[in-house]
Length: 401
Picture 1 (tube, rainbow, N blue to C red):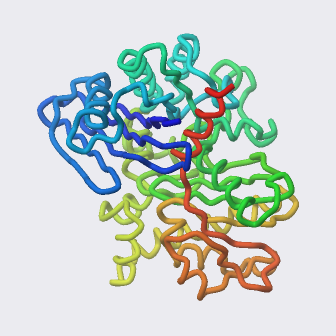
Picture 2 (picture 1 turned 180 degrees about the horizontal axis):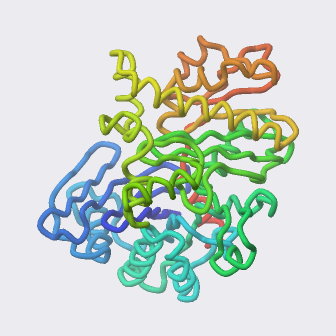
């Protein structure tokens, strides 16, 4: 069974073709600048070859046609024809409180995803375009499955996801914490249980997905009970360009002082803050941040200190929320690749049973494995995430039903 996994943006379409026999990636790539016909670019990578070329892609439909042509007709084709693809699995950012699990796509499901566009205006409309384009190109005989970033967090109790706003507004506008990165948190929390050799239903796990966008989740006995991102991905930790949690009064104060519109303030908080804002526009990348800090840049050092402090703080608070913790794991671009972030985030938490092995932390960087000391009561792990594989697995299971 071969499954095509899709992650669509407004002008992009990332893809992976996965052979579910051994869960290997047959080919993968990205269609970029969709809509800019003269400059749209496709990349295509197999085990032995990589292609990158300009291809006119006015819409997502042409993007799908380009991918299919590369897989079936190019010099480096990996399948003979479309019939070898059994299903397509699609990442969807926002499922609201409608979807608590992955589902088979119907016209009604597409309409429901489109109806949630106000909650994710940058993402859901693009997902809908891709779903309709995929259906147009593949036809009705190739089933589609959607996997939601928010679904894993639907197990949060009401006390964790509600805001202290007048209830009529919360109900009227669906104002609540939804959480994001759920596909990643779900994958790594299950994977670490597998590595430890215990059922996830017996573990209290804190999953730290740290990258340009970052979030931390409390996973108690296999179910999410709290997470740092909220109504949107803006909440929680300091990130590459996002401010993270901030006093709403500071936002209102700044809007008044600078005479900013809501759209302008949203742009500031989402695209000009975080690492980028604290470093006065120098960088939004953690690797550059660490390099600048080593060179003596105080703003870069501060930005790094701020995020690592917040990671530590959330680990402590989520351990309290769960009544203890068995496992802390790090994933994502920063979580998997920054020895410094893991070391500083765990330092000082010995009182709650977390003790890092510095040598293992260095040795297993960019890998998978346990990095806690032998006498640590809480296990600490690096677990690379694989959202595409989880999407493929859900797609296979739903289609096989």
